[in-house]
Length: 85
Image 1: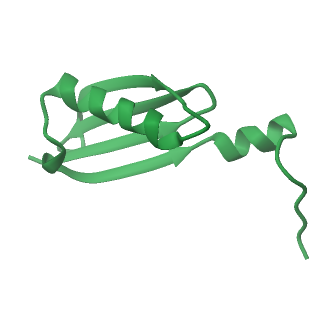
Image 2 (image 1 turned 180 degrees about the vertical axis):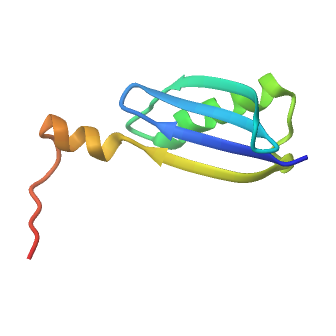
């Protein structure tokens, strides 16, 4: 049995989902995104989804992390100036 963990860090919430055998969702969780230290929000979401599913971290075969923070920053006009040469 293979467990896959997916985490997405967004502007407000960090979402985590745990999938078994690439087809069955066995857990989903949401935690507040902590912009000052993203590891806190990611850790909270991961701990929550693992606890919900009753799975140990060692049982996870693959973990995938994505974020929309960079896209949000561009859309909102935040961040520093960049250039392409």
